Picture (cartoon, rainbow over the protein chains, first blue to last red):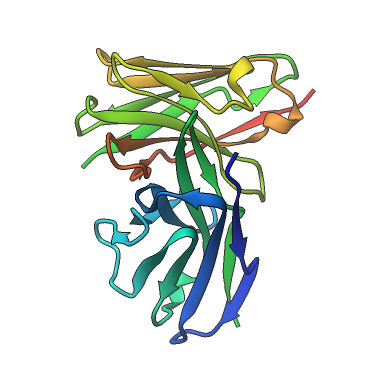
Length: 110
Length: 118
């Protein structure tokens, strides 16, 4: 069973700064099966990135995803006040079919 | 614009059966997988299972023995049943979709809080 470990658990930054969030898989995964989500309190998660590096519809270009194999990264180039939230990575495995989320990274205002 | 609207009982006693339904409005029902995902208070997300119209149903192995997902293409709805609930099943339950060939959930329901308490 693949386990996704996100780091750091909490990231404290200021608006305008660059954020780098990590998602590490316990074994190699297909880049096409890796996605990133943003969740704000009381809201459903919002898809940011799919296929490791493809921005979802309507997502600003300050959000970018990269990585392959076991190491994936979500980068927010210049933080806006609305970007402070919890971020999750998601991986799909096909044998058996199963989706696994990372435990989340909380991005908070410094 | 596609919207998912979900409903079901919000308060259950231990050993009862959780039952939720999600309806799809404003978009195609075919060609998509329809999933249930849950989030205990203050915790992370857990995928429960998925189904596709006239196709396969897949479950999270950790919940498989207690879960039934059904998909009704005639009504553009899909449902979740989780039996023998305990306090550990207390969570916000979300319905969500992903397109075949794209393994990411792009549209989510509003979420439904289900509390299990005696």
